[in-house]
Length: 104
Image (cartoon, rainbow, N blue to C red; front, side, top):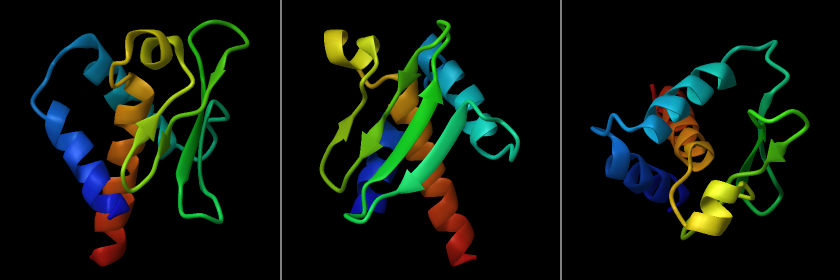
């Protein structure tokens, strides 16, 4: 169910070219650069995937999480505006990519 939720999140912005989606694609590329300390992804014991993303403002760290039924991020864009932020979009894309790669 987690992967299906991530795929659903990805499909909501797959053809968008807004600034959040563009920035999410940049974050997604950074996830797969092994020496980038600003972006980390991990899976906790409950099966929740969590990213740690260094924010664009000095010293800021954001923590997007995706579960089988929800997505949340600690960044102001998500907390204050309630939008799917670039961090959630990048996390969803990373989950789908890793799942498809493991199935190949």
